[in-house]
Length: 382
Image (tube, rainbow, N blue to C red; front, side):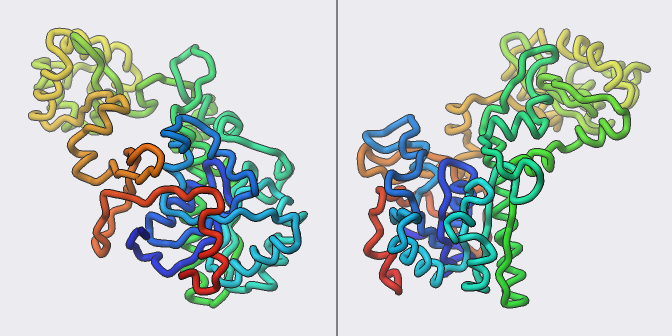
């Protein structure tokens, strides 16, 4: 059951494993591409990551839904020939090995580009294919730590804190997807394939957002601020009578509406809070003022009042809340994946909504290891 999308007819040879590369090829599949997942004889490591439904890793199945699997030992010449035959039919090769690995197999960019000049070669790795760290291994935690994002995460004075999802892998996977799509456009214009080289470390630097600007402007090293924004106030988590909620005011008009909703209009003209610069400078005093009012009602009561006042606000949802949120469900962001072992299960959908392609609420199962060999090795793939 292929997904309908603008990349339909595109064939991707997927030589990736675990998360960064499979996330990239999952997104290509979500846009309609056919993904031929080439695994080592013992399979992608993620097949052995929990949790499990029956014998199926939900981790693996979520990332590899709708792909096709063939197992090849690329150290064996006869298996390498099968791989090269796949590339002869392919538009894109995606791999996420450490720099130099493909060259040692005789399958590096220079070699493959000479043989397959239209092939787009996309490489996702910890540190990229150049620079003094290129030879190093990396995982998500390494990228988060070295890329600075961990230094901005958590509570002030707290221990090092990992971002709750594997943003080191996922950001690199997304940047690789963007690079591939740019390379496809380049090929359409020139007839030539190109190499896309994306590093997890680079990707973390790219998403540091205003932290770099703050350091450049002030020469002060940014640190963690918990649930509050470094440059906008009020913009963070605030305690009501029973729970926290988010309040986000990014301009004077919104702050004025917040003050009216709190029945504290004088806060808008208080010298400490007269504009955003003053509010950021006096953020703790502002938080105390706001929470002294919020303490009088429950979170849900305040959410209704603030929504009616057109003040951006929200609850702080856990994963169960997210999977049952009516807006999330209305946008088809919870889909069902077939699972031969234990029935279907829910997973995150595709956030890219395309007007020309209707979305299905279901996806095909992830493949069993080597399950599609016979179909893949046939030249027409039928």
